Image (cartoon, rainbow, N blue to C red):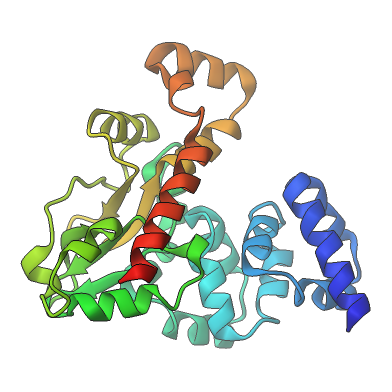
Amino acid sequence: MQHKSSGSKILEEYIAASPDKAARSVEDMALSEAVFWFSGLRASSIITCLEHMNPKKAAFLLRRLHVKQAARIMQGLNARRAGEIMLNLPPHYKKRLADSLEAGQIKALQEVLNYPAGSAARVMKNDFLSFKTDAKIKDVVARLKTLPSNKIPLSVFILDKGGKLCGVIATGQLAFYTQDSLAGSVMNGFIKLSPFDDVAKARDLLMKNKLLLLPVTDADNTLLGVVSVWDLSKAESAQPAREKSDQNIKSGGGRFVPLIAALLFVLAVIISFIIFQI
């Protein structure tokens, strides 16, 4: 066990330092060996590795995990990669996994491969938290307290009785509401994206409105995912250098990427402190 623990730690450090190379190394392992080392990784390391792996091999490793753990992993993946992996899962496991995901997340996974390159759907994540309008604030806080401090979201989304997005609550504001208040009575309005909107529009909306994330909904207002400044930063960093340079010149995007990681870290610390003091 100690050998496996130390080996997994080394692999995690490799994934953090060079995710592309680490993913290739895992792909080159014998499948039984890859499963052995993979099962000892933290969720965040698994997500990073799967983002860079061949979807077929990623699907093979994912289905060796407990289905609830696999569902959490899928929610943390880029929507396109999650959709590609979903296509490579055997029918029986795909059904079990689908039962552990929300309807909006399933719809996003099924449709994402049809969305155009450069669209919000290609960069959105499915790891959002949603509650119905009749949920009490204390129940929202209790759910947040079950999450690791680095996984507490910046906002939670509020759905009506039909499961449609109708409001949003910034996590940091939860401490200021009466704990027996209903989510629907304190929720705020929101700015949203269509999955077909391009990333340039997402960036402009985030910057102009001084927001850190935006919900992505379909025409019926079903919540499909969220796009954050961090997602856009990673998408831009993955572009070819010349394309990135041209985009930055046209949109001023060069000012958008710096300090995003530091800002999100500081906000996460502040929000975690607020939540765990309630």
